[in-house]
Amino acid sequence: MGTVAIVGAGMAGLVCGRQLQALGHQVIWLEKSRGVGGRLATRRLTDGAWVDHGVRYWAPRCAELQQMTQQLVEQGLLYPWAAEGFRWAGELVEQPTAAYCARQGLNAIAKHLAKNHDIRRQQRVTVLTKTATGWQLTIDGMDEPSYLQADAVVLAVPAPQALPLLAPLDAAAAESLQSVRYAPCLSLMVTYGDLPTGPLNHQRGWHITAEHPVLGWLSLDSSKPASRPGVYAVLLQSQAQFDAEYLVQLDALRSDQSAVDALQQATIIQMLKAAATIVPGLDQPQSTRLHRWRYSVVQKPHSAVVLETRWPSLVGCGDWCCPANGPGLDAAYQSGVAAAEALRCS
Image 1 (cartoon, rainbow, N blue to C red):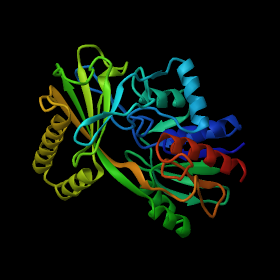
Image 2 (image 1 turned 180 degrees about the horizontal axis):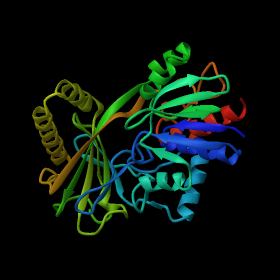
Image 3 (image 1 turned 90 degrees about the vertical axis):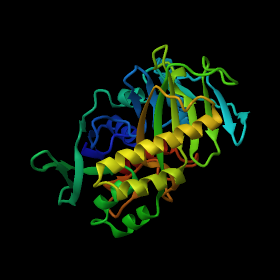
């Protein structure tokens, strides 16, 4: 069996690679970050709180991911999240949601999927070259580039990151990628020494989908089993338009660090004030940490579940591909499986 290089070790890339390994291929993952999982991201804050600041919770819809979920539950990796769900559009209205969480955050699931596999971290692929026998990947190094030879390649990164690798090779496939659109998102992780009493059950936990100009999501992440007792940790996630405006300002200020710091602080204050209009008291934090996702929620996906190119040995996958069950974890999972199947049939 041949060697497959997978660019990206998020959900889609991990699922695709595991499928290919089961078929007997040698799989090498090249991940530009220090960790794995992509938006299956968990941050451990300085006061001991854990926050899932990318994917909010695990909620499978397709039958295949539901089956995988059951296996993860049986292995003690996933647990039902008992938090109460609400929608807010001026007032709180109950909106029950079946959701799962992980004992050390959702990134623990990515680490489980990546365990004992050849995942090479901090390896940014800059050039993809077709050779007589397969593919050569140029990898950005500390001092000089390195190279990897592979029989097949899977681009399992956000569509805008796959585009510069694909454009010199296949103009038609690159053009199809240009139509993919993402909404950005700001994730503000906030801790509190205490929370005021009110209509929400802070012991059981809560999460709120908000129709607010600034915020789209609020959740008490310390109600998940990852966080230590005595610390309240809340995740605030912005509306796409609010974050888009923030990113425009941020990009304009990159050369002025003091202005960037001032913008971030003003944005944090604005998000906290917005949160306090929904849950009183959330504007009095103990600590804050802001993270931005430039490629967060897919607004306009690719037209197929897997990106095919003029070469059967080069495919793309991710949550930006169009599955039957909509965007999110299901899209990433189904696209990863479809990419493996496409290579199997090539």
